[in-house]
Image 1 (tube, rainbow, N blue to C red):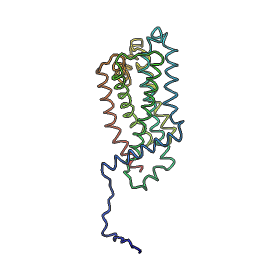
Image 2: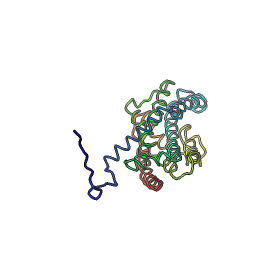
Image 3: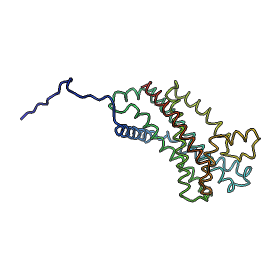
Length: 272
């Protein structure tokens, strides 16, 4: 027995050129899973969030611990939150670099032919990178404990401090995603991003107390948004206090997302 399928006439079909919010969320998580598969197949992409935290923690602790704090043990409560923020924020640059590489290879052109939300490849990449931030955060904290750091805030506040760093890094990834969309090459994205990040991370209170700096530099370091993130993480992890720096860090993250998320989406839609 054979059956025949009835094909409706084109004039009677109801075609949709948009997707719902729920479908957009599902498509974004699917693209995030794609990003994780890329990491599994090319694990060298994780070098900046695996090797760098260990190397920087050992290097800065033993090089500057005695000169700045009089010893390694006294320096750990200062340096571990600083290394944590510096490592995770620096890792957010990879978001823009990989986004530009995918666009240069034509990957996003192929995505345009799929019945998915147009924003899903972008949002999926940003979601997948939160796993990278979590890896860098975990390794830095573990290295600190191995070296002798004992956070006075307890495990709960350490987790809150880690989440604060991940949230701030995710918000900054929107800036570098914007560079990734508008820049002409991946190397230019990396160059521009590090040109911005290096002064912000090293001219802050991440590695030294600001009271040891010249007045003009101390003023810049105290006003530096990275310093507020570092101070908030130190207060949460070392003393278990929710200070004004934590609120300033969260406010800054919200402002960055509010400004750069629409700009990035708009630029991406024009490219796509």
